[in-house]
Image 1: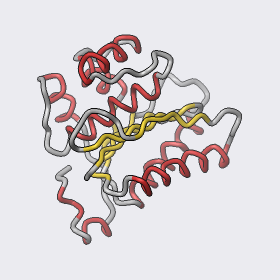
Image 2: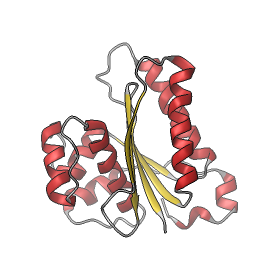
Image 3: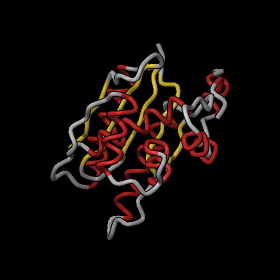
Image 4: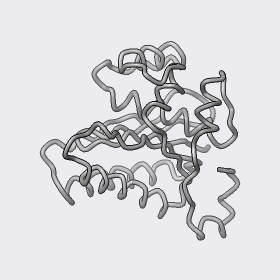
Length: 188
């Protein structure tokens, strides 16, 4: 079986969701709460959780991660380090990925790029029948991102808003090793 990964990157609680190719029920849904961890210790904690996910679900076809929030104040260096660790991890593991701007994720899930967290939660429940606690925004976003990752390679969608989002995303490079191993069957 193949899987799709959604990553809602955050300095305090990174959400991860893994969807199987044959259903909407996640096989893995969590938030990596880093608490008071800082610097390299925080980055290592998130990397280790990604390593666990990769080990458990090796046949990851595609990943989607939320792009940077430019509204974060005084955290740009920390966020850049986290984003770099995640991108490098995906690259090293030969997992193709797309970066989804926050407004594009909202549009993919709800049809509206300015939807609030409550609306996203409501749509995840009504659209995919996935009940996630309302305070678990990171898991909810990661779940939506996993849906993007699943739809992206073949541009399979259920509505126009989803298709517009998928067509607007730029693929990220895969390593030459992956291309030589023939794992580029996913046309990103």
